[in-house]
Amino acid sequence: MKSIVIYESLTGNTKAAGQMIAAELTDAGVESVACPITQIDLQALSEADLVVVGSWTDGLFFFGQRPGRSGRLAKLPVIDGKLAAVYCTYAINAGKTLTKLERVVSRRGGDVVGGYAIKRTDLQGGAEEFVGRLTGALDQVPRAS
Image (cartoon, rainbow, N blue to C red; front, side, top):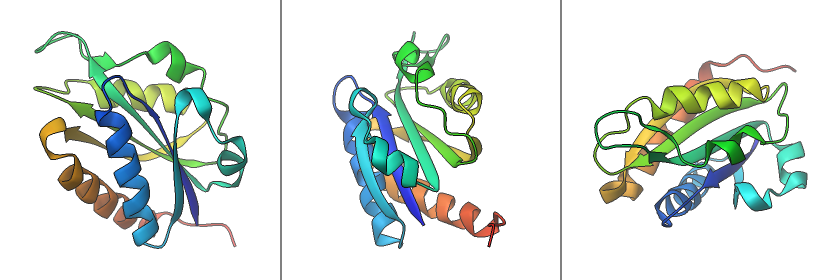
């Protein structure tokens, strides 16, 4: 299985989390690369069985949260027929960021199988937990032979 982690990052936290997620996926036996939404590796995307999309949480501290720069995310290439997962990084409260990000990815054709909100003060722990949950969910998804 191959994967690509595509992220939108403002301060570098979501980028760092994306790189950690890609490394954790690789350690789990899923070949993975990470790239920003502005420089998607189209070859890796075309070969990927799994597309992971990440964003930072934008909005006010306790309401109105949404994926950061969602306009860029909405222009993600079409990923019909690919499994997908989402993650967001946040400082205080992720709110409905994951739900909104799932909708964006679903509109691009991804079959979203999971998501995780990663607190910016524990990027490594969040990446490990997300990949652990994600690989468990992938084991349950029927694959074409």
